[in-house]
Image (cartoon, rainbow, N blue to C red; front, side, top):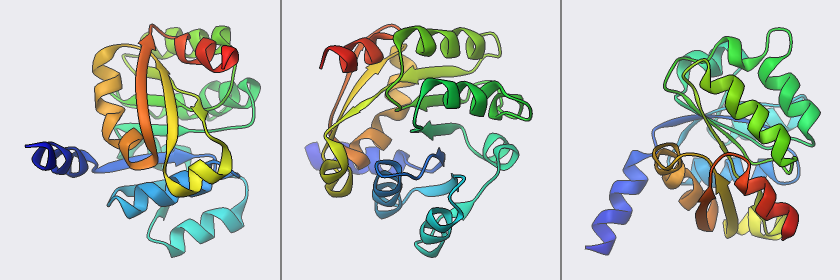
Length: 185
């Protein structure tokens, strides 16, 4: 029974956008590819993008990711960059479809996460803040811990992706809760 459930979860991974291929993001994206995810990647570092494309990913600008993906995962250096990627001029939010779920795995403040959640909710787009714990070694071996804040339905949509990148994922509470947990951790 457990194997069937796990197989169903892996089959649920269909397609995602991944923005941020730094020290943490690149190995996390590689683990999604290993799990069979069709992945669109984006980063300012074109060498990191090329490495992921060579491994089976597709390069995607914000418009492509917004139109092609119902799940978008981000791990970026800080909250200002997250805000700019989402809401800046030609930002990702302008291309997202209603029903999409954005998961920000960056370490940002709870206020920044709540701002993203509120703005995206107005567009009928889900948002989960889910900073990670474990550092680069656990990103590489796929044993990160995810602390999530958001609604349960959005968290459940993200669970197969968390399973491909980590050892545990917990929904802590409403938007901002993942960021609060990361700060106290």
